[in-house]
Length: 137
Image 1 (cartoon, helix red, strand yellow):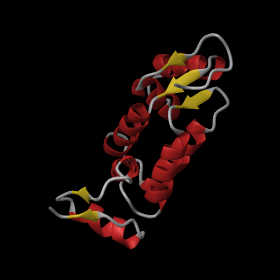
Image 2: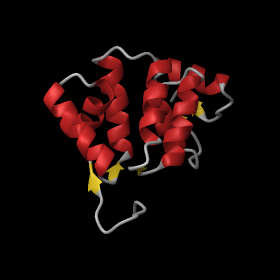
Image 3: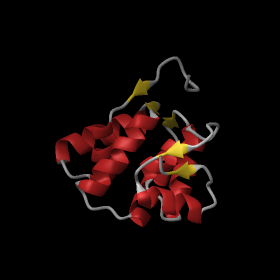
Image 4: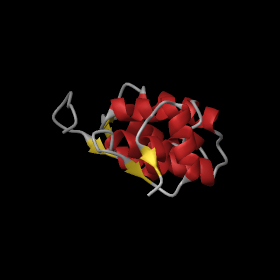
């Protein structure tokens, strides 16, 4: 359950976050900015995941630019992240070369015996960071 300052909090979708961060659509970007700057907004971890993917795959953001944009967005006074610790962990791992989604997956599975994947890059980056328990089947 997200923390609440007031009686009302709005949940926002990926498209508002993307419009806010890119300013690519004048009318929608202005509306997104108005909502996010004036209202307390809840941003789920899945919205952060999708935002990272859209900014990377559609807008060509590299890891450094993604981390800066997502950290800045998450630090806005009216933004309430569902799990700020998880997002911070994933952004820190992305700074170290891990995929944002893989870092989210690993964090959520940290109490499990192992995280099993065919993704060789995920295995290599996890081992390089000392994140044990990521392996092939």
